Length: 229
Ligand SMILES: Nc1ncnc2c1ncn2[C@@H]1O[C@H](COP(=O)(O)OP(=O)(O)O)[C@@H](O)[C@H]1O
Ligand SMILES: [Mg+2]
Image (cartoon, rainbow, N blue to C red):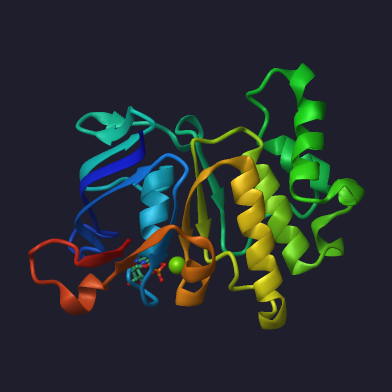
């Protein structure tokens, strides 16, 4: 089954500006982990923001788990899309503990399930001992795992990760990659991972797409991107 289907997506930040995304079509099957490669400024983060509902496209359709979320006269709000997002800087709430950060994602779930779900998420990301700490008391890798736990807690249909390794020490990268892959597999989640490092894709992803910047290469024939099986 297709978890995400994108058809003929177009987007510009300003009405007269250059298109950032032009006639972009793409689909993603259940359980796949797809890498989104491309140089800086090619629209990778914008693509994730369009899928999660933080931006509104000028044209095109997006369907998530069979439900149209973007289309003619359709715009489903981010919180109703079933999309989990891990931002480049993790965007944890600094004044909330790890547990409170994870709880934040659960406000729509029945209150009686909260405690158990937080516990499950702490176990999934191996952070059982750290539930009462604040983000500034954690390493970068630990903060990333909390962001992952918060995004996965509401059981999203798809997880979007924007440059998950860019803020981590290079010498930790390999072990964090392995750990991330094992968490994603255990959570059995469909995932898109933005990165500019092909090695991340080789280590984690089933396949990848490469975005090309339209500002340089726009030829009017649609977004150029390559897929690698
Ligand atoms: N809020 C914004 N307003 C105007 N232009 C933006 C905004 N955010 C990004 N852009 C531009 O859109 C293009 C794509 O940006 P982005 O999606 O962040 O690329 P990437 O994540 O691949 O580096 C860039 O040229 C960037 O300057
Ligand atoms: Mg980006």
